[in-house]
Image 1 (cartoon, rainbow, N blue to C red):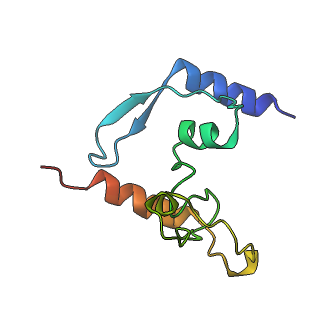
Image 2 (cartoon, one colour; image 1 turned 180 degrees about the vertical axis):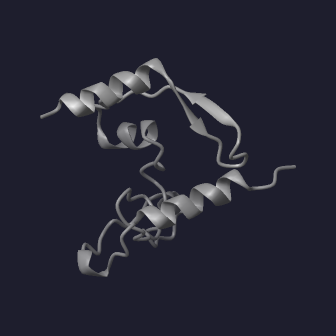
Length: 111
């Protein structure tokens, strides 16, 4: 039952031409591979493109914001409060938002 997937992955490994998003008549050559990433959570997040352990929005599945711990010393400003595990209140990430953010990143103006 995995044979169709294996065949598509072999085709992507060899390379395919796909339409360019900005120029529909132009085709772009791409290669792709399916890889397995096995590491601890902070390393996996970094390798897979998510922010580090100290991020305000550090979750790869939702938009929950983690505030800084309140304290009189400046070191606590660098520590996050990961409490509040009421999953019903966490706004989930979704494909449409992800694509919109990718478009914003792609179209961002640099100096």
